[in-house]
Image 1 (cartoon, rainbow, N blue to C red):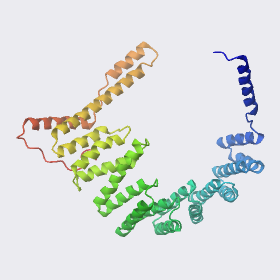
Image 2: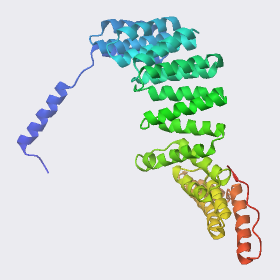
Image 3: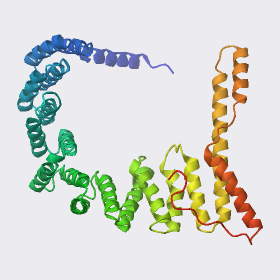
Image 4: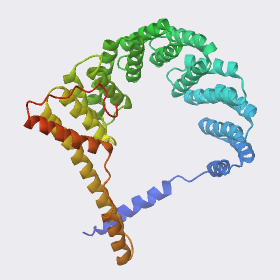
Length: 405
């Protein structure tokens, strides 16, 4: 439908006005983008000099800080670590916005720790960042550096634990308090003594109580479960693992994401319930749900075999046979999909002869059968024989933790 003439003129005037008001790059912005290309090309000395001039001539203080950040980074990339650290020091005190000051302080500390080999100075800066700006993302990275220092150097571990707990005690409601408790517990776990493990478990109990809604709760529960396992408290370990599995519904079903820890927890629970904490119904529950936790399970035959073994142990031969058949059906379907995809690729070749030859090669492929297929076939035959001959005694139950676990 054509617009009336007046409407056409009005639309054209709006278009012209928009073009007239469209922003144009200033000379400073053109120089900035050109200097970025010099940096990307590896011309660090020239780029650093130009970023310094841009920093001095910027009309907007935030533009000056951005140029300053790249000046510091360029100096460091060019091997001028002392100059880069000094540059970051200055930016950490002069930048207009707090996040920029925090980033600069973090990078100044990193250069001192990893390049200038001044760990004591770096640790002081990392700790200062955690203390002054716990709500900034840079503070969590600084905390990770502190943790790694304690992890690498056992002689510094107790000092680092004490520092974390001191920082946490200063503000138990800070944005980083939960991570201070978690990192303290992780360092205590590495100490490995019963007293250290018990102290770690107590810290994590406090973390769960005071920070149950924070993002670190899964790491808290996973670490505490591991500690309880080392202490021999398997019931408490299972309790924490169950709680981790329970987070699957809220994370995946409602928010479409999942944690690797959920799969690890379910796997360990199956092992516990088939062994030291015998509870075959719960083992079967987790064996059934475990594949659902994986969007693309690469080892589905292994998971199905575990489920079938639990069903056998529960005295459910018919259900076990059905699950063993699921193993064979899954592999057959997967092989069919592989073959169809390969034939589709053959169809994209240019000549008819090449397409035919490619398809013949694909059709000659032998199906890929993992070891679980042979095991499933043998067990189906054995269970079917038992069902036909009720007088046959069932073989002794397998040890917990069958193939793949």
